[in-house]
Image 1 (cartoon, helix red, strand yellow):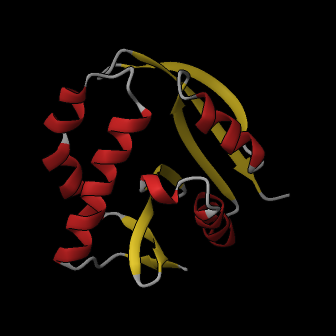
Image 2: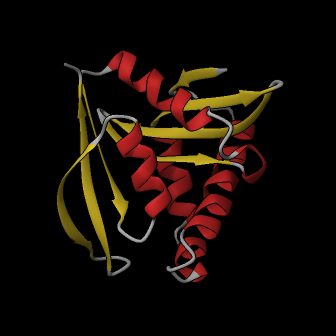
Length: 144
């Protein structure tokens, strides 16, 4: 089940912040873990102000997608629930609310690139993430 919210409870915020951290540590092993730990508090504050789509399994938050207008800041799913279709459900929910979606993904994260291509996104440009010094690919999807 997917629920869109802008008003997270403290418990929900803590849960998704921890999902964010664990997901980044496991999927972005090419970036030092210190980077994710150092940015935890800042991201937690940003999450509290963001438009969040929560993914539930049996009344438990197991993943989420953060949105900034039509920009997908990221999709984060707990390990046991990865590859369960929740990412597709989150994207589908956003597609119902927007005519165009944009995002960026690290070029070394081939699984994510393939996932987004499978959801109808196309690559539009490449650029450097100055914070991590990693190459990113900008992608877009448009309703047509």
